[in-house]
Amino acid sequence: MSERHPVFSGRVALVTGASGGIGSALCRSLALEGARAAIHYCRNRASAEAVAASVESAYSQAYIFRADLANPASADRLVEEVEAAMGPLDVLVANAGVSGRGSYEEVDGVAFDEAIAVNLRAPCPRPPAPSHRGRRLLARHRAAWPPWLPCLLA
Image (cartoon, rainbow, N blue to C red):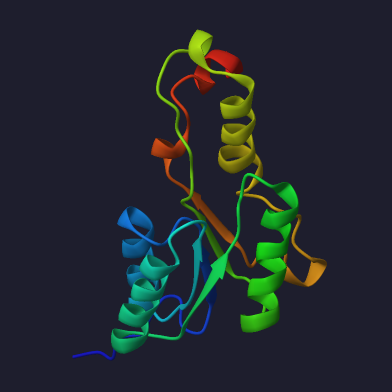
């Protein structure tokens, strides 16, 4: 039987919206494959701590980071904080997202701005440094797109 080599061994993986649901499962999966998990949350620190504890007890090193991705400066700081604590970012899973209910006509300016900031801008907080080019993997779940966004892109 051949020896197993984790795909993301030693890599730093940031998962946004990782305090529950799909995000927490993604953290565990990446950690199982050897990644060092950067667990992002906005509001639920206790859940993020529980995810970190489960990752650390079974798989790999984990850190938690808080950021409100609706604020562009906060999204940029998130990447800086992850890299300061863990080293260069190799994997970004843009799992965080907001989704309003209702039609295009029912969406107000505040909901629109928040959805654009979290769902479109935050996944790419800043261009990678020249030394990081070719090292990042970006993944985005399509369920995070607000239902009215296709009306704007059409």
